[in-house]
Image (cartoon, rainbow, N blue to C red; front, side, top):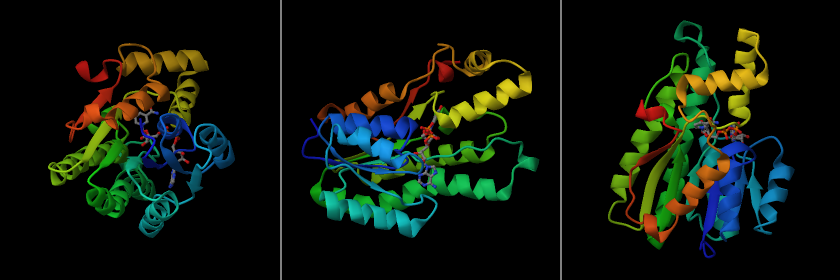
Length: 256
Ligand code: NAD
């Protein structure tokens, strides 16, 4: 379905971003990965579907590196038709104890990076009159939780940014939408499970159960594969007129 398309997925060496990158590649897109950690492992998985998959090591807190990555995607893959703004980090503390450097890093990586990447990629999409921007926000783009000031602010920000970008492109073939997962068991969340297990003197399974029971009525984690299937759908012609939405995939979290 996406065989003539190219995709740049930020933060795609693990978790949700890797899941989305693999699904886009499986559906025919040529992909550029980004992120730290096990780059070779992620590339090896992507190359099973797209032998030409490449990786760019841009640090998403650095605007010039983001722009250079988009330019490299356009130069080496021929275009940047699908942009998935997914890279993200978390830090949990009450506001008086929240280190200002952590605030700045979360706003830069979870919010500003999406602006810089869109700023670089949208002109090409507009010229070709086809494009998809998928911003991986969170249920925390729509509701809050304690101790996540920077994360909730950044995710609310990216939902707003999604709406503006969608409106600016509303009469074109470029659509912009946000995906808002609830709990997904990735390294980002495993850290919170570990912290809970330690704080409440329970094992890993009980910590997971408590984490889910607090917010996610299905008591099931959303999977990267489920989010990836939604991303593929949003890139399909059936989604041509889905614009500026924030779609929650959250086991009922926001229904409460
Ligand atoms: P993860 O930790 O598995 O993956 C994060 C990715 O971002 C990795 O590839 C990492 O290398 C990359 N990254 C981090 N800092 C970077 C930087 N400065 N520059 C470039 N890459 C960087 O996390 P995940 O859970 O898959 O999270 C992906 C996105 O989904 C994030 O935006 C997160 O906020 C969002 N999200 C996650 C959940 C969840 O429950 N896991 C829920 C809602 C939203």
